Length: 92
Image 1 (spheres, rainbow, N blue to C red):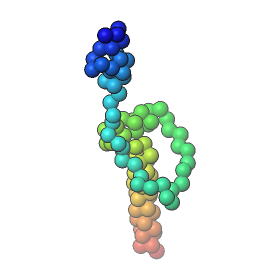
Image 2: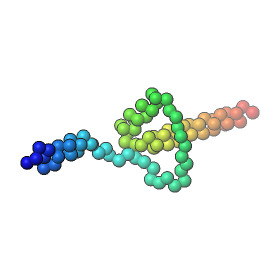
Image 3: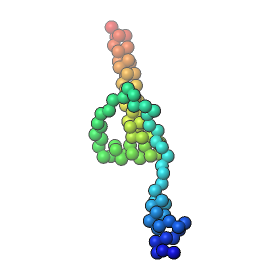
Image 4: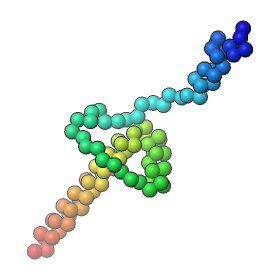
């Protein structure tokens, strides 16, 4: 037996690497990129850190987390504009 062969007849380095690598479950991502546009987002470190942690806990990709946040913001914005427009009409 050679000096490098130990566990399961594989070199020691292969066993170490195989135990160090843990396959994470696949993150939720868009089903298709069709109709999507790409752009760059710059985030402060603390927001990026919180987003990365939330991504790991929720099992979604960073892109999906950002899409969800943008959709929620747009929904809140539309609702606020509707309220603002309807209250303006009532005062007239």
